[in-house]
Length: 142
Image (tube, helix red, strand yellow):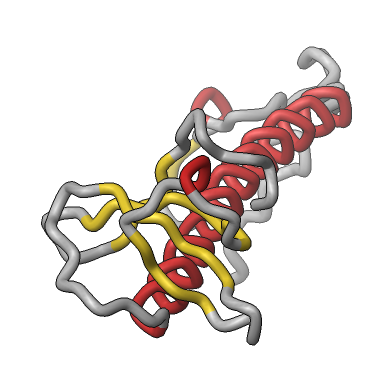
């Protein structure tokens, strides 16, 4: 004999063999409250804008760090390939110039004491990396 088919209005779970209308996360009868979809577009747009601003800000910070790292690399490359006839002392400030052949050279002579083509002032740190230092003697030819 065929099993008893329940009417459509009856919520019967055949797997558990029980009535489970009260356990459903939605209304199961015509008298249940209407389910209205929420308008999440505003919430989504606000979230998208906030996330985009935060990511753009982080990107700009990383980009600035990258540019600073590239500048350090370029400075160190120029300084280690520059001409000088002395061994630089850690922590001392040295001055980078261009000679008449546009070749860089390092000197202990400050820009106000000579007429060389001044590039910048640099200090050798304990990691043997050259750091650019700002001096009042800079004539703005950076």
